[in-house]
Image (cartoon, rainbow, N blue to C red):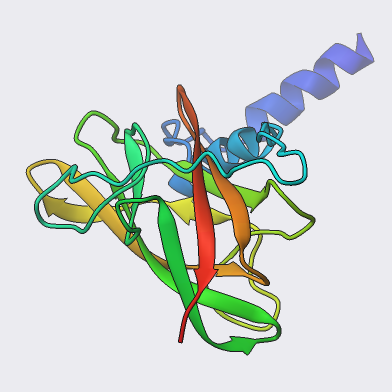
Length: 183
């Protein structure tokens, strides 16, 4: 009986609740990024001496350079033969290549891009710094006609055969490229 009276008093003294608010975008985004990051990398592995199974470059949008992969997210800035030239003096041991990521109008969500060397031990990293991030979060900016883009840098330590894994909502693809060093 006393407990019931206490509960009624507490409830009666509680100010009226405000209308429920929408879930903040940040927590929704955090859940999406966590879900995408939880997907394991599932990249091919090459035996020593095996040829790099590079994706071929194609024009997917006339406003960007050659892009690799079958989409709906593509790295642009590669050559037709699936090579990406890396250069510059290495920052913290990391060479860089400018890569423009584009998403076709059929894909409107976030995407997480990660990678690794598939014929050796090296990681793929992104953006700048002596300890660049292991992943790139694609949100995309309008490019026109429903396409989105996001400029970035891909970082590698050495030439070789590498693969990106692109994970999005309902989408996962692997794009193989060969990193070449050029000045």
